[in-house]
Length: 363
Image 1 (cartoon, one colour):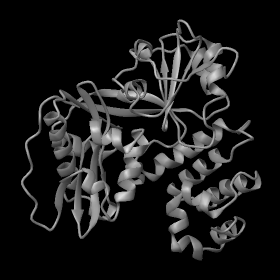
Image 2 (cartoon, rainbow, N blue to C red):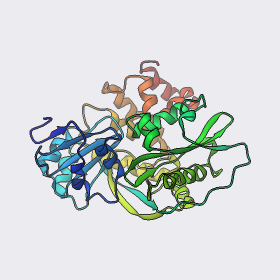
Image 3 (spheres, rainbow, N blue to C red):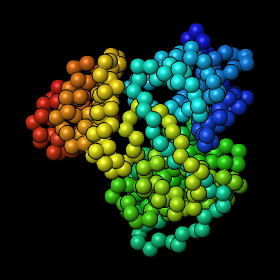
Image 4 (cartoon, rainbow, N blue to C red):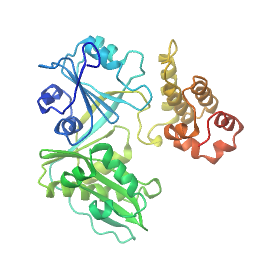
């Protein structure tokens, strides 16, 4: 028992799937955890029979049942991470009191996601002739010394419990140039006759059609495995991902809202400086009375938004607060939260940024 009205189940239970049926669109991540293919934790309001459930997996928190009690979601609130990127997927029309209990003391803002579906195999793409080879993700690739294979394995293990489960039930495609993986698309989840896929393209190799190439091949593999439906989720402002989905043939099923504790963009260029400024102002307004004392994470999120809004002084002010709190302690921790800043030579040359870095433990 984790709290007075919250119990953690130790084994996946597919019978719970009905509680998550109100989530729209379909969230295959939930089904993958309950089927035992993906890792996750499941909490219920009571052991037998549960009337509400919450599933936590990766960066997602999925709320099951149409009317979970305020007491249950208040208990779940204490389990939500304070120190990292978290998205909460909700059933529609959740009562305001229940939402307030779930998000109490947290910064949770509504953000918009896009979902599409593919129900027929896409046409094959002609072989590339510019030195880039598109290959399936098989045992040979996973055991190779290609540059980027470690990231490929890490991506797979973020969604699958083991590589062997992925190799048995999953699939994917990569683009290789000069011994390095420059694009990849793998099945995030495969349950029954459905799957979801995602795509990644190296920053230096975008706008070359590589995302479309690997996603097309991954989708074709899905249908060759006997699947009948391929799903695609992304942020509604992710122009690149939406373009790839359209090129492959995904049809939009709609947009949906989640609660999110970060600015909502997969790539920094998907939001304009004014949008980052509006986000940062709203973020600080909501924390005007109190910020979580145990975490400096909100300050780091605000710092990134102010920097992207073109206001480095306000960014530095927030980072300084995270350091003063004793939460932000080392360069390696900052690198994990904001790799672009730590890698920037211009930041290290700037006295204000350098003074902040010098207050942190070196790597």
